[in-house]
Length: 167
Image (cartoon, rainbow, N blue to C red; front, side):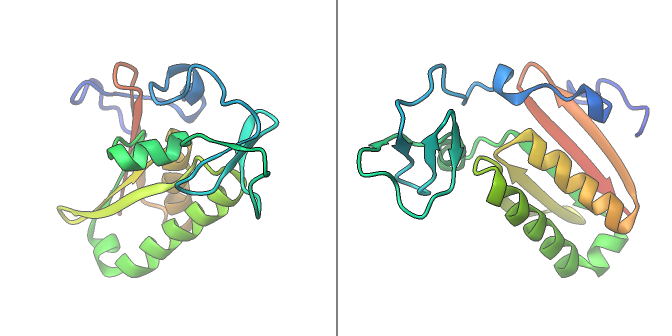
């Protein structure tokens, strides 16, 4: 991890210093939805205190838009993954597929962890996520698969994580 500090209000953090997103997330509901509930946008079901995937929502489920769908609708990410460098430019499709695959795997178990967008950004892409943990996981997946340089910057005031990967 790089020794940068205070860049644009962000400070570097170790992986074990990431905050529990629920405690700080302004998008997290202050009260849990009445169970059972389903998200009319993505179909996730809130049951047993958490959002999960089910084939069909229970007949008695009320509608409640989940946190991830609200973030996607408002385009308000919790995580930013900046990916770039000459290696990325040469392997763009492969590395983008790696990130999509990682998101699919995480989303299968954790419906609130999703990629909002993958957009061009200088010599690479900017991946926005609905969850700080997915942003961290995408950076770690790139580092494990391709090495490179990985940095984390957490901003408490804005409750978000920026991950930078280059090679």
